[in-house]
Image (cartoon, rainbow, N blue to C red; front, side, top):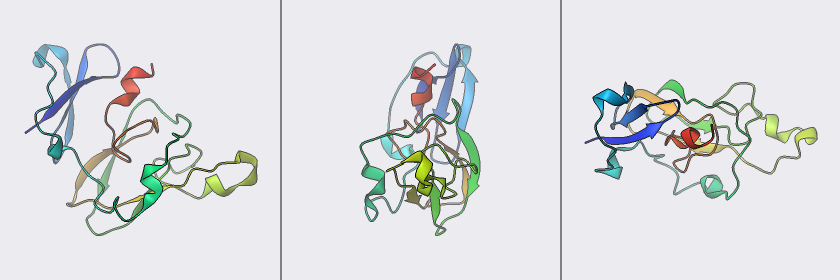
Length: 138
């Protein structure tokens, strides 16, 4: 099952399945549909750590997602503030006093080894995974 939605620049769509995200031309996709939200990657430890429920979003780092190979049972810390020099992961820059940042990184794990697209615009509702929100920011 796939979830398709329009993204980014001019007639491009992201097709998200449980294992991958593909970008295809709009001529190949005739409509936008959300058939099954369970196909979108999930942070398997979001219920344990409250950082993912922070109401604020960080500053926009980039307008496109970052593809990254992730492994199950490994802890990752996704940068929410947008100041990290090792995007999309946190390097602790949010702790520097000059940024006066109150945002905390999002600790997450994945269910299976695969390539995942992590949000770089920091506006996603599916932290840390890209949900296509960057398309509305251009």
